Image 1: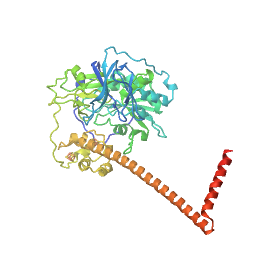
Image 2: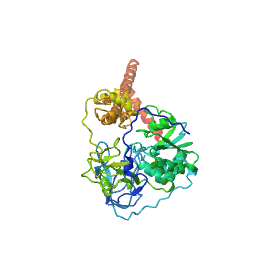
Image 3: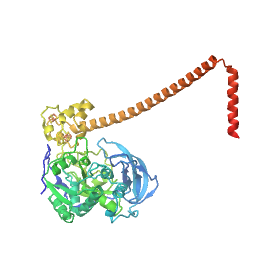
Image 4: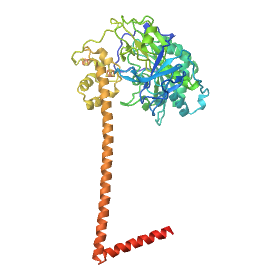
Length: 508
Ligand code: SF4
Ligand code: SF4
């Protein structure tokens, strides 16, 4: 029996997961149009390979990866490209971004696909390339390109693969449902992932508030010797990668580091299935299971949704009552953000669409001054000092923010949840992180400009020195000739004659 360890801090908000009736997957709506952002992942946006007016098939690549940290985008069904333009996309900042809009023809005609059945005979580079070409980015909510996570160049390699079925955020039950409905596929995908990274152990991690998922995973793991189901007490945010590694392995990922630094790889259950389908069927990632919940929807549940489906279509199918709902969130109540435009689409990271009533999830209360109670520090699972970070974020003191490890903040919101002054701490941290990122990019830009300027100065100085040396040599030669009494005119004629003779000799 594996020993379980506790993490610092954490909270126990009301779970409300039963509302979305985990355990069943409902078919999502078939919208008239799909809106497919080029950037549904962390890294460089994909680049379109189709034009307006093109007919596309389901599974066809419509935008290719650009650079190493990027993934392609595929059409989830057949239709016509009717626009490539800026549309509202799910993002905490409420931004718009370039999307390919496909009007569906209702035929759902697919491009032929083929997979690799004997994947154990293929090397890791080939398999990683299949994962990359399938457009797979982590489906747990972070959206990091999966192939990049698999490409650890650590000398000691990866010893443990964790399938992170923690899903600790209230309301969301997509992972729970996927584990109940597709446990065998998850284990099969995990075996491929373990083969790619060379892991000897697979831990299937499930919080103890999901007994049906744990039972399904245990049954599915029976025939896989390297897989072990581990359950542990429910606490938010146990699903953070660093927190989960601490719970299961009593190991700490270093500050600023990633799990691969200590030989661990974490993947979401749905990502494992996407990898299985990419390798064995050649099927790209075009759908995902998303929780649609909240008391403002009449038919909550977990739906298999085509990527690009407008959130309003998804809510419409779930019986959303806009008069009852006070807002719609992308994600859960802790880490989610407001959907500012219901036309924005479901993307690879959309694990939940939450439409609560005002009574159910009241709007945030006005912030009051910090009373230095320290509750936020007690709740922080990353052992940070949230109140200090808050002061430094307000002062835009990047140096102190970095010194106090702001970049280790997982934006879980536990600190804001317990704050009696209702300070929206996470908003300050997000904004500060983006300020630090901008400053770092600006520094890189100015370092590059300074480098170019200094290189030019050095070149000009080298040329000036060489010119001066030649001039000095000519002057010294002239002075030497004058001192020897040589006739300068006759000497010039002789030099010209000698040069001509050399030329004739060379030409003959
Ligand atoms: S919980 Fe809120 S009021 Fe208390 S120290 Fe932290 S930021 Fe200040
Ligand atoms: S949001 Fe950041 S600072 Fe606040 S509790 Fe979570 S990890 Fe700690």
